[in-house]
Structures are given as structure tokens and as C-alpha cells.
Image (tube, rainbow, N blue to C red; front, side, top):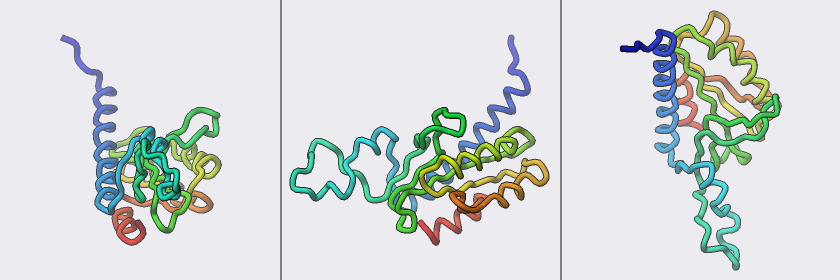
Length: 173
């Protein structure tokens, strides 16, 4: 009988806890009245501005005024490769170009915090809209989370814990 290597068990556990954090964000957005669409549905839906036009295409679905897309294709990364945001939110009054949300959960030591510089550089150089980072779990190396918070500015609006994001979303979304 084959046994799962310990490093794979840790990887699966990290994926599971990370998806719980993303599910929490998804619940906050739906609770605030945002409809979830797939990237394909969002691009196929007719924008609100065209919905009242005389020659509206009734074959196209109507885009909700407030929506979000998980794993939204942002465009090319700093390496020129496809880049997805964990969430893209459209219809928030304070963010007319949309809002990207990245969720980085690290419950035990690992490599998530090593990817913070890549994330920050992509947000500042490649994202077409402002972004928030939710970084939580308590497993980051000493100083990593503070470094990430210190990078806020330009397109990176803020870095929040999950509970800080909940409070922020209640006030701003």
C-alpha cells in the first residue's frame, strides 16, 4: 500500500485552508449583494450602459450591476505569462475600474510569504484596478507580513487580515 508523502499532505492541507479563506471572501461578497459570475459569463454579459439602448441584443445576458469573478484573468504578469486575480469585484461605488482581491493564507511555515514580492510587483505594475491583499493564517516568517503591509500605496490599497477585511468590506463594499 502506498503512503502519501508528508510534504504532499502539508500541500493538500494548505490548499484546503486557503480555499476556506477564499470561501469566506466569497461569502462576504455575496452577503454584500454581489452576484458571482464566471470569467466567461462576465465577458459575455452586456454592460449596464448598453442595456437600455434601443438596439439592445436580447440574446446576450444582462450583466448584474454588482458582480464578482473568482480567478479573473487580469492580463500578462511581470513575466509576460497569464495572471489571474483571486477575485475581481465590479460595481463597488468607490472603485469604478473594479477592485482586485488577493487571498494569501499561510497557517504553517511554507512558501506563500516568499511570493509576496512577486505579488506586490504584479499588483503595482500589471493590475488595471486597485487591489487588496488578505494575508492571514499566522504562519508567515517573522517580518514578512509587516514587509507586505509596508508596500501599500499606488495600486495596492491595503493589506488586511481576514477579520480586518470583514470590517473594511462592511464599510466600503
